[in-house]
Length: 325
Image (cartoon, rainbow, N blue to C red):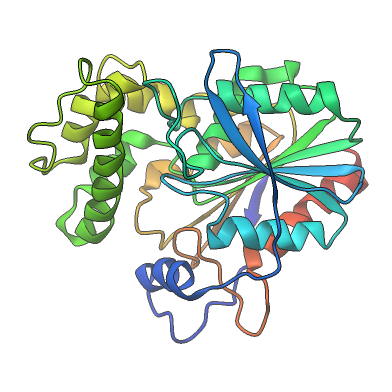
């Protein structure tokens, strides 16, 4: 029964709510000394991904995947890259399509349920390098992609892929989207809507015959925006199909390598359906850690140069490596 009692008890006194725990590190945290080497990976469908590496000739590799409208420059990505690289990991930080600073070539972007790009990255790593152990680390949407990928692959995951750690994952998109429509969360909804709208407008310039951006700023419900834009652009019939096929709860049962999911009860955008206790109780490979605090991709640690999530990632990886799980 891999339901874990959380060890996160380090919330700063000046971050009294989940909202503050989410926003403060995103605005004020600075991670210095991270120097990536960029590689452009040409994909099988003619598009590309920009990958950011830290190579120190270690035998362990961590592949990091960011959240919605994030990039490898986000504080949580740089923080994890810095911490793990100092602990004898090479790092491959993946920018999803359109997130590296240059728009991708094809119509489709990226989403919670699209696992093909991550699969190609992992395939390329195994073809070109000889890492003894590979681990996946994902945040929010990046965590969804990882959980979906591992569940869909089941027992056919590459032999050297030893496990994964994920944080703040909306494993049930139906519930999380409904929560984002709450007026109390208008800050998050408006911010993501603005960022996604800007990207859709850029896509419309590339594909004027396929995207109509008239009235793009008039949607009040998140699902209406997804119905109009996100779902069809990414190959889904509608928002309902997108949320169903993109929800990791549908795939976690088939995960066959050790995985840790850490979700905080005060995460502003998670609902009770995003804490899949039954799946943790029935799949010995799926470890669910529920903390009281932490916010969304927060988990600050006062007095430390690193976040608790970075320390916890290394701890979990060390545990499964030592036990040989």
